[in-house]
Structures are given as structure tokens and as C-alpha cells.
Amino acid sequence: MAVLSLDERIKKNLKEIYENKYAPLKKIIDFVEQYKQFELSGAKDLSELFDSKTGKPNEVISTHGLPGFFAGDRNAATVMLMLNPGQDVALANNPMITYEKIKRGFEVGKGIDINSLEAFISTYKESSIYYGEIDKDRADNFDLKQAAFLKHWEKCGVDFAGFLDDDYKKLGTSKEDVAKKDKINKEAKRNVLMQKLSMDLIPYASRKFEGVNSKQMQLLFPYLETLFHEIFRKKRKYVIFCSAFYNKLFKQYNKWENNKWEIKELVDEPIPSDEVFENKSAFCTPITIRQIDNGKQQNAIIAHTFPNQSLPNAYERMEEYGRFCFDEWKKAFGEI
Image 1 (tube, rainbow, N blue to C red):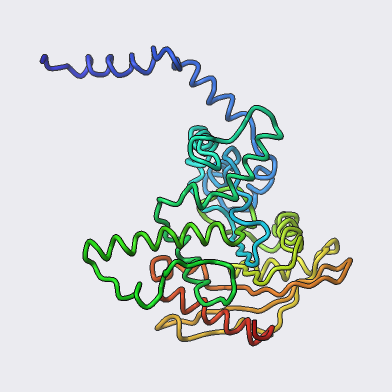
Image 2 (image 1 turned 180 degrees about the vertical axis):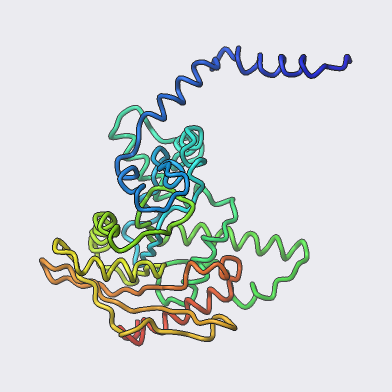
């Protein structure tokens, strides 16, 4: 076989790209340029919330990618609320990433129906409900972190499949034990995604959620009210806000002249625990949320320390943090 020169190899590969009969290069470029022309209005409006060294909104929050509005059972007893889908913005904005998400759909091989707007919306919602099934074969530390946190929340509705049970904790590093642990992890991950309701404050992907000051928070109030509206759609057993940022946001929201809900902290300061970490405290705050026009009320808790960077792979520490938060829940609201 003849040795290809650099020029020959360049020509060979670029010819394949340029002359592909199914997707000529110009057609691909035209498609990408057309894709860039649209922007999700909500994401564009929120782009000013975040600090950006470049000043380019698309590098701060995804204005093109498929939003992540919820995952799991919308009628679940337990609701966990994060801040945003943590994903690289450029990756989320990539049209092929959106295409792959749509192709996978709520059932492998079926895809999301885009033949009509109604079908698109309906199958998008189904894909969000069944996301745990779609993604069941992929290990994910963040999802297992949620399972670890909920492990001791009585009657939370999640089957942990043996995750963090005594036998699980005894598993070693042998090939057989690793395989057992992997199987349990994947089932626990699937269940925690499908048997509770997860929502983010904003549904648009961004790598970080920081740089938001009190004057800018009003932009988030409509999104917060969407969360409250969904929470209050039915009575929930547990509502858990998984970031200290919610504490700041609630204080500002209570001052808003148009607020439709009122949040009351049941303690003067966040409750500390010195048992989760060796050298610093973990915190939580029990709260009540009241719908002003009808007086309906929902118990909830702010898990300030949930996003802590020390906890992603330390499942037993997250288990202890969740136990601490549940104990404070029972003190505030009574036995389950």
C-alpha cells in the first residue's frame, strides 16, 4: 500500500466531507447558520444574570439547546429542586446534541415525534418522565448523590435497590463485587430519576450558577413561581430545595410586591451540623410556603450544603447529610 502524503490525506478526508451525497458541506453550514438564528426567549432574557468575561450571552447560558424542564414523576410525593442543568454551554447549543436527544426520545428506537407541535410537546414530556429508563445504563455521580441524600427519608417513594445498605457497604474491589455494585448503582439511579420529581430553577444549561446579585433576582421570580405552581398542583410529602441560593432568592421574593406565595423560615439562622464534615459545618433550613390567595401551605426544607464540591463521590457523607436534614424536618414538622 502506497504511503499517502500529507496533501493526499488532507484531500481524501476533506473530499469525503465536501462531497457527502447525503449532507453536502454547504447544506450543513447553511443548517448550522439557520439554527443559530433562533434563540430561546427565556434563556436570552436570563443571560444578563451571569457574569461573563467575554460578554457573549451564548457562552454563559444555552440559548439554543433543548431545555430540561423536569425529570421523573410529576405526581411524586418527593420533589427535589436544583438551580440549573449543569452542562457546557457550547455543548448544549450544539445542534447535533439536540438532534440526538430528540432521536432517543422516551423509548430507545422510537424517538420524539416532530410531525406536529402537539406531538412534539407530548413526546418531549414523556421523554422527561421516562428519562431514568432512557439513561439507565449510564453511571452518574450526581444522580447517586440524590439517592444517597434521600436514603433515610421515610416513605419518600424511591426504591433504592440496596444502595448504601449494609451488604452494599461491604462490597469490595473484586470483579464480582464491582459488578454487583455497578448493577445496584444503575438501578438506584434509574429509580431516583423516575420515582420522584426533579426540577431546576431555570431549565437552560449553564456550567455555573453564580454572579447573580439581589437586584437581578427579580428576573428569576417568574421561574420560581413556575416551580411553586407545579409543587402546589398536588399535596407533596417532601419538598427539598438543594442550594443555599434559594435562601437568598426567597428573601428577595418575599419583598416583591407581586408575589403570589410567601416563604417563612422556621428558624432564625440555618441549622448547622458538625457531623457530616470533619472540619466544617453542613446546614439546612426548614421552611413553609403559603399560597397567598387561598392559604394552602407546603412544608419544605433548604438543603444549603447539597451542592458542596466535597460530596459528589462521597455517598456515605451525603447519606449522613440527608439523615441530618430529615431529622431536622421531623423536628420542624413532626413524625412521618
